[in-house]
Image (tube, rainbow, N blue to C red):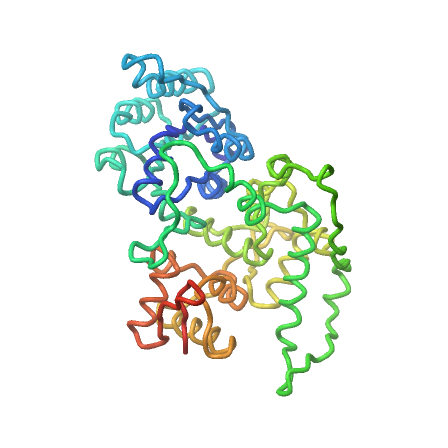
Length: 417
């Protein structure tokens, strides 16, 4: 019998988008971290967002990439339509609760306490309710009404700007996004599938080469590991070709075609997904459950892209290098998967110091988190109780492990050890 949870997601978009902008340093709301958090909780079968989309023109592109159905509720027809989106959202949720018995969990993405009666009614109908909201814009009444409540700013993948950041983010418009930000999002977040897979394969190759490290003179020792024969050869990227002005492609069109998945190294993505599963489930995590969750996050995932014939072979490769631990599972071909013990906060501070020392004794804050995850893929400052990596670095400074100072020339924090 299939006991997998079926989730329906309803998004009060104006509440979340404006809450993130006003209380999270002007940052743009991104549905991706919510999608990842829900992927470990079950299979999402419906995603609907309600708003007057004339106010959120650029946001529609992001939501469409995440397969969210956009429900248009025009607000510019007078004060009588002020709560039109909220009412429509309530009606649709109740209708779905009665018509689709297979949906076991409703996810209400809002911080508005006006939805508390809806939450109570859904629970009366034997539905589990998960709430999602920005912490500072969420009413204290709503989380208590839900079975589980996720604060958006605490989700993995949400980098909240620090309040005392010396270089504040540029201000955004009141309700519309700047078109100029599209190339930046397309470059930083999205990449063609071949490039993404090549980068991931190179990252795994580096993970294999690191134990064979460099000698004292800095020359790399030749690699002689059987595991390398299983991986596909990564072809070098072709040289950039100049394109005539008339043949240039609109970046917004490239963004539409770009896959909605992360460029993080594969071992990091596996560790993050495994950590989420361990925190959200009461029992052990099996290899089959892990792969299902990876496919929910990225439907194009395949272990063959990294040179492995089966997912079990890929997990054994990661286990041999200390990224995961394997134990006997319920069946011969479905082992239990767990993360190695990460240790306490002091151990994480020592890890940060070691990474900075390997970088020559000093390193910029930006990019340092990725360097830490190369040494420990399951690292997460939020699992240690910190809101962001900057707060974690400040705690390490307070403990005397590293020194932290703002560098005007680099326009970034500089960490020294």
